[in-house]
Length: 236
Image (cartoon, rainbow, N blue to C red; front, side, top):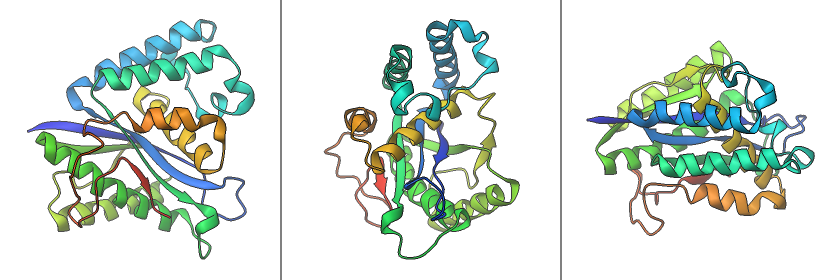
């Protein structure tokens, strides 16, 4: 079977004292054979729009420096995001997000609780896409902390194995500095988080991102638990 890779990053923290109003894990899936092309094309876009910053392999695109109100006024930031969307569409990708609106939390939560819940929700829907395409899924996420990363990976492994999903029973981790795809995932997660927090500036962009998917909107696919397939998941 061919493989499909889901690259992920997170935005926001669940602690009530944190300034974020939402917690989002987001990113995109891509046929494994196309991942090198995405890295080359995204690095090329960085070099084209930010030539003064030098070698694109030595600096990161960060959502906080791209989509907040003042940075978003700069044409080169908007052009980079537009080019990123074009690349994702070109390479047969699906954009995925799973969000938590902190105003809907009934009690204080920590990353040790929210991260596994969000990852399991993503896995449930990603598995549908993989099954439809006859692919084996693999998840690659940005590094967080060893204890949390190991905990999340173990939870995903248990979820995948017990339900016999067509995925690697693990989460693999990579550096955002050295992995261009993780930087794209950071943009996806950051944009979705600001939308959930009420930043109406980005609503149209969010709709364009959600439209990047390999399964049509009118698909009647359901997950193993009977939920309708979606690539824009709202946990609560």
